[in-house]
Amino acid sequence: MTQFIRQELSSSLDLVRKLSEDNALHRQIEAVVGLCTRALRAEKKILFAGNGGSAADAQHWAGELVSRFYFDRPGLPGIALTTDSSILTAIGNDYGYDYVFARQVEALGCEGDVFFAISTSGNSANILRAIHAAKERGITVVGFTGAGGGNMLEHCDECFRMPSDSTPKIQEGHELLGHMICALIEKDMFGHDRD
Ligand SMILES: O=C(CO)[C@@H](O)[C@H](O)[C@H](O)[C@H](O)COP(=O)(O)O
Ligand SMILES: [Zn+2]
Image 1 (tube, rainbow, N blue to C red):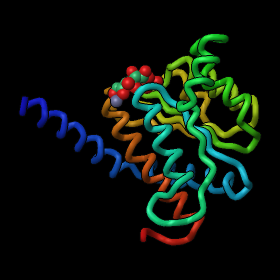
Image 2: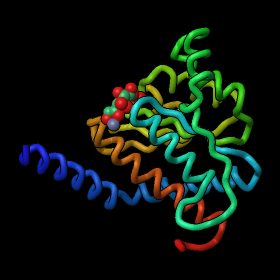
Image 3: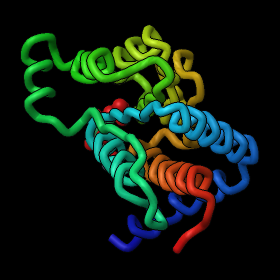
């Protein structure tokens, strides 16, 4: 068992080392933070969606914006499309699971919003359909995926590709990016660092 533990920790360290050395990624993070803060200053909002562990990320990051991250400050408009069981089951039952996020983007999204589309494979049908719905509405799409990129890659305005093919490892990378982006949005919008 300890060999598995060591292997897991070693691959996580390898991922973090790659992220820390990727200057293009750091510039991409800055670009995404900038597009998010421009949208927020224009009274727009950020939508989040993903499946499984990525649904947890969607809810986690929306909470960082609406509540707080490092310090007390006004709430920021973030909505996770993964939380309302009545909406999810109604759409899934009436239109099919592929539409559970796209229908919400249609109903809730506005031109100028930002949509964080999270899929480790880049191929989940309900994420791809939500991306299509977002683009149709002039909503900026920021993708979070893995090394392969999948079908979502070509449809995102910006897409973070973690340097791994392992779903759990990709998610670990997404978690790091999500926290950094939320912290930088907060800092940019309200002008100071941590408490
Ligand atoms: O969290 C994990 C694996 O670590 C799983 O729940 C994983 O999120 C699910 O298999 C998702 O359905 C995978 O979808 P996606 O990331 O490829 O879009
Ligand atoms: Zn997971």
